[in-house]
View 1 (cartoon, helix red, strand yellow):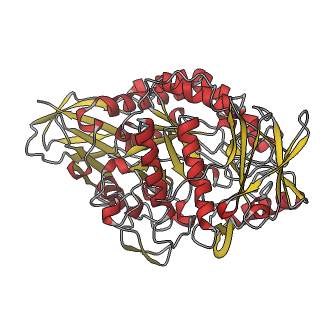
View 2 (tube, rainbow, N blue to C red):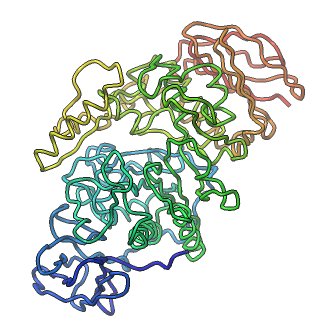
Amino acid sequence: MSILREIGAKFNPEKGTVFTVWAPEASDVEVKLHAPLSQKLSLQREDFGYWTALAENASPGSRYSYVLDGKEERPDPASHYQPDGVHKASAVVDHTSFNWTDSKWKGIPLEQYIIYELHVGTFTDEGTFEGVTEKLAELKNLGVTAIELMPVAQFPGNRNWGYDGVYPFAVQNSYGGPDALKKLVNACHQQGLAVVLDVVYNHFGPEGNYLRDFGPYFTGKYHTPWGDALNFDENHADAVRNFFFQNAQMWFRDYHIDALRLDAVHAIFDMSARHFLEELQEHTKQLEAQEGRPFILIAESDLNDVRLINPSEKGGYGLEAQWNDDFHHVIHAMVTGEQNGYYAGFGTTEQLAKVMTKVFVYDGLYSEHRKRTFGSSAEDNAAQQFVVCSQNHDQVGNRMLGERLSQLVDFEMLKVVAGLVLLSPYLPMLFMGEEYGERNPFLYFVSHSDKDLIQAVRKGRREEFSSFAWQGEAPDPQSEDTFMQSKLQRGYTSDEQQLRLREFYKRLIHLRKSSAALVKPDKTKVEAHMKDSDKVLHLLHKTQQPYLYCLFNMNMQPTTISLKHTSDVESWKTILHSADSTWGGPGADITQEVANGEKITLPAASVILLEQVK
């Protein structure tokens, strides 16, 4: 494992601020302290291209920038705060004085994560960390156990999904900056909520990206959708890897983040003997031992490759979990009928049954969409290693009109989909507003200042939609109206139907947390069956007694089926029925007890949950 080297501006109350920057090709580097200090200090060159200096009079809030070879003046690549945006000076941040009150917080086990993904800018009217903090009681009431923040690293302007970030260490100024994020995390822990942070280690945004002025952060050896790949395995790669190792440690150590969601790891190219992700996990485990609480790495990947989460002794990278796109695609294709783009080849009854126990649809099968054999078997991996959802920022926001499922399917089917996610054996994730059927879209938005870049973004979005049969004109990503349309309405406070849906989600989450068969699901003890003839999914959880029997009618008409014969169960009792008027349904004749193997009629688009009678 490589030795870590501190970078950026580190403040010590007794000594001042140590500035360290990596610039291997520079012959001279100065740190320029701005008003009121107004001075320059020469940095001392050290091994491997690092430069460092101590400024005794630089304190929290001091603005500074680096001057390279007496010419280029640039913000710090490892800046912890950009109070005036991506093009202006950096600011020193004090990580020693914040009043943390979460000393008793030791995190929660991964299998207890029920994740709520949110975008800080659109989650509340304020669009700030403080705004999120004020809504934590609502999330606690819903029953989720973790919030996942879309990226908060400094991006251009004040409207962005966060994936155009150019300062990975700097907390977005328009969201409230470093202390506001710490207050949010502190408040989450007080409420018993874990915090997952989305980080981007596969590319940088275009505007405000000055990394090439400092050193070979990129390589032309590989190409990504965003241009040259980050340099994880070429000359000088050690310092680039260190840059991101330090970043992960900062979020865990200085902001008390519980888990990092690693964006699109399939775009991290590394042919080193020890992959960047494997080493990142090793450094994370080392910090975990030092701090005495768990830190979790979750990968987003579209490769269906369990190497990410397999232990090193099996040739894996050892990450705790990864997203499972196949789960989403099967459900979405089945309930919407869409078969365009990457939904091609998804949506069969066989696939829906398969993803409930085998994780991936494509686990070594030929994919017509990809024109190749794709994926690996997850037979030996635990259910808790996979995050599943029916909606997320990508799957909603990368639609041309940003429609949520609430705009695409019937209200009763929304409850069926909720059950598929929350009653699956995997780690469930909800996308903000999903729980009550938010009707506002979640669109793609930016606030760049470069006119050519703005036009390129508009053109790129149009091209991205070419493989889908969507009609209409894509909203302008640069327009503030696009951003404002994406803010949550929270209509459940006045809309009875939305309130009923939210209550249904609450009930499912409660069952997820309280049922013996669901608390620690073992997918090897889960059975799933589905036939084309009736399109009803039978899902049996037999991890612990009392067993649960979940029935999902995917038809838009009533369907009569026979319960599967289960040798160690005599009868079942109904504990949840989505058609019940309690949940905004049309009403249902709820039979309290059903014999093993008995016939039962399911209303159109409904989910029924049965519990074993002992």
